[in-house]
Image (cartoon, rainbow, N blue to C red):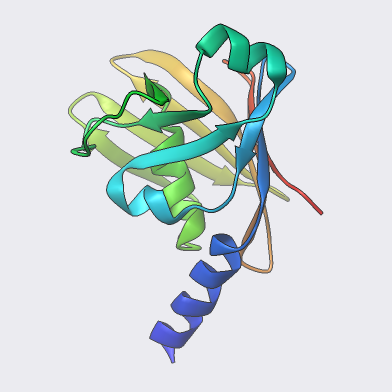
Length: 155
């Protein structure tokens, strides 16, 4: 039963479309979160100005555990804000109030009011802070306030 529930939740994430914005500018769209298991998040660049500046049709945020090959038609950016780790927890519907050790001197604190609030602390500095809004096991939005990153489910 638990496996079936997990598969249904992952299927819900797999077919959802999300927009990703940085500093108030929509950069692109995320078709699904399948790539999170391989420690990266891929998005299509839909903003014409961003596509011109990047010179690429896709961009990838990746974390320290990413082992994939890079290709020339994609812009790569290291995730220094633990967004991928937080999204992985949300995709598995494993979001709860807790302190998560990422690496030595790096941790994520999650608390709960009506949404899940997270803070990523790296070596004594807050590198990322924001809110996850979950509804029926589905990520509705991730609003990161330090670096102004938003991932929002399209209706």
